[in-house]
Image 1: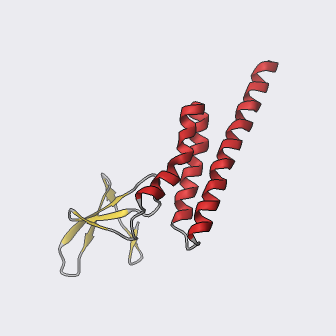
Image 2: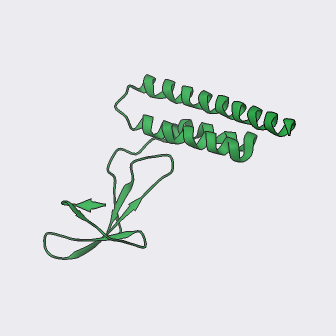
Image 3: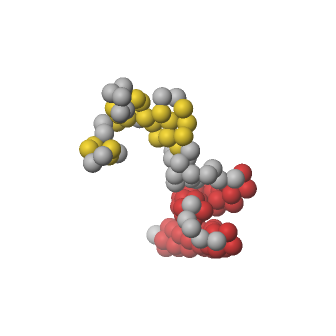
Length: 128
């Protein structure tokens, strides 16, 4: 992470920065798997950089992760990638219809990718 063009050192997930008054402050970025925009924690106080996603947006974004229950690790990878993409979509400037539609396409794409990967793996293992 950089501040005013200088690199900040990260120690145990915490950055130390100097405030305008000379006091050192601890800054921590709180990441969430489904939301690409972190929350910033400064001296114990959480600062929201963007409006939080709603509960139903989290559910919609997380739907592809259900592939883990169907497809184990392969389904989890496909679903996780789709969920990450959906999270980025929901933070874009697109319309709500576009966000939900493209996210649904990502979910369907993840399911299709899972089916293709499993079919290829099954075919390779069957022929050996």
